[in-house]
Image (cartoon, rainbow, N blue to C red; front, side, top):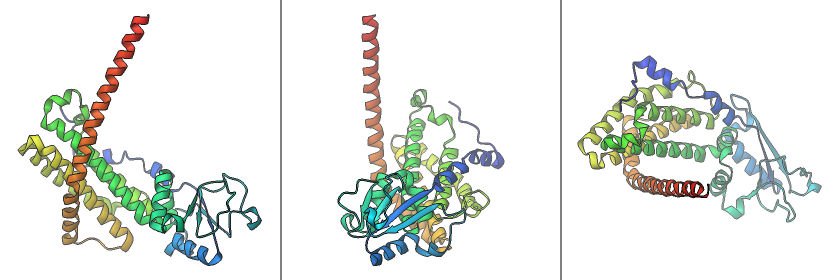
Length: 320
């Protein structure tokens, strides 16, 4: 099955431009309403942690967050009785009343500090991750790590599937993923990652503002892709695993380099980039193997579902 022609740089760039920047902007600028409850002294520390260095300024695209403070969740302390007013409440210690039945309350003391609380919030409300990071700097490191990891695993899975197709051409009959040029898909995912990292760090989300971070991705896309292609060709039986590992490590390296630039304003050195890539590649082996196992199990589950569906259809035909 022939691959889609990539064409020249202009055509390649036009394909990448199909990414919906507006969707990222809308997700990142979702209005938020958060309450902090507890004693005034502990609330002050929590608000400083939430706002960080941005406490005295608003985000470039406008601050859409509403952060309020109360002694407790009791109406006598002025806490609103409307359950839908806040996305969630952060309790800095003793601020939640026993009879409170409103939105979710996350107790810093009970959960185990900021890191554990942030992870719990992301687990419960993944749709809030990007706007929380954009509005409250305390969420940025965790959100950035999550964005990078998710993109790396997505690229690894895509490379694993298309690598299997390349190694065993007969699979092209049932897995038409290879009909789309994988270089475009992998690079688009990395571009999307950079834009989401920019949003999470309170920066402008558009191609013009992010060109400095995007150009290296476009230049590197063909390089590590060609290495992966050579590995697959050299060792067809296992090459697709290494190809997925390269995709994972390359994406991690790009993400961490961009995140370092957003956090410090400094670009990574060549030695730093090589170290990041080596560490990511070393850690990718178990992740990719586990991913391959999940894909295999998922394929078996899909097959069972197809068999059961066929049986149901056969039963219906018999009844008719």
